[in-house]
Image (cartoon, rainbow, N blue to C red; front, side, top):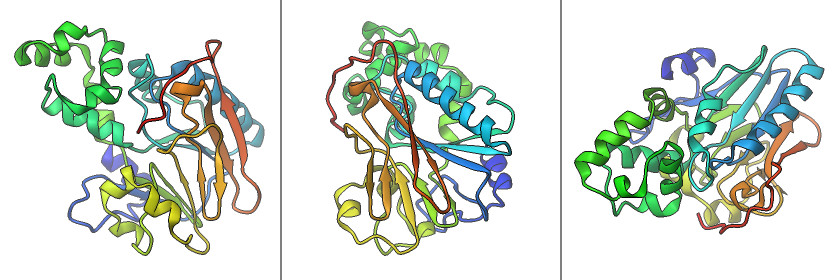
Length: 272
């Protein structure tokens, strides 16, 4: 998957920072239609509803459409396994899914490499993710050997490969897509992975870089935020029932889409 993504976008923008292990994708021009989807967090019905709207909008425009998913596909919501099934399935004709990693994907991979009953990830939505694969709490918190065997038998290799192959960022002229944000004054190819996945206050308080729009998630709110130099589309679907997408234009105002489910009265915490 790494090579396919690098070849698709010419391999430009790949990080020179030694600590980075994931690709940073870039394209020299915008597609005919360009969208982004905020943090999904295991909420499959809102994802289906949002994608249907985006697919319909893209079909009306014609040409090629790209959808950039900003990470945090898993945890907190009840259907993380179903979300990964959908994201790894074939998209409609002329639609290309570009999936970025969030901090929750890296936490999940860390857990799979070293499952422990006291792992922090289990307290940040990881337990719900494992439940979505049919694992029980007794197995998850039981003997390590039995837990490892259950993880191997319940979580498809395709899902693990998908998580391992996620990119850190995607950029087109004038816009950068990333999970959490960027550190001010640092070139994109030298940004530290931890910042791209976790940064908040330093990014929000920094002066925006002229001519660059950062589209991100990670920090949930009741509604999308349009601020100088950035758009945040994490609307805390696991708590609000609303998943937000946006269509970007090289010149023009963004257009927002909202996916909900019939059971959209979810309540929960906005904790990271």
